[in-house]
Image (tube, rainbow, N blue to C red):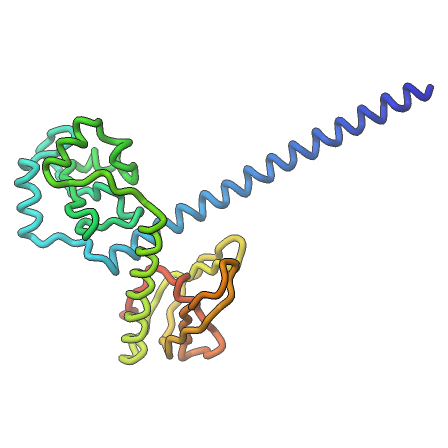
Length: 239
């Protein structure tokens, strides 16, 4: 009798453990999906930021020269129709068309090949032979998204945003931006339109130690403070 009781207790314990594991696995997958979704949003915002604050436009003479280099045809499929200019190392990785490190970061592709490549790194889209040909044409492929590059990118973007906000406050220009509040676990994405009052810096203690943070105060509500690092797609409001 005692053996039967112990047997059923063991069965219930195994069922309980298995059920908890299943729920836990499902919960983790759900969290991963949320994080992936927010990462896509973050990458899109970052791409817009880079286009605003980095030199991401080619002049007409530069475009003509580039098309001559690629003989007026798509580098990948050799088509001569619907040509476009692709960011060789993706702009979402912090590399605009013209870059001091990357040099020429532009490749002529047709619209179809450009869409296929998307944000795929060069080494995963082109063959080794194609990468060598691009190197010979002056297009580098060996630069990767390193932690050093990330720090440089963040510093450059922050500096650009601070200058933009200080100028807007001095000129009393109304601005709009997307605010991604990173204090919220779900990164709430909010569209904001304000008249900037002033930019203030202060030391803040984060998990990695003391660091200097920059904050924006609005003229409409002096109690509302925006962390400038969490401001994206910043532009003037022309309403």
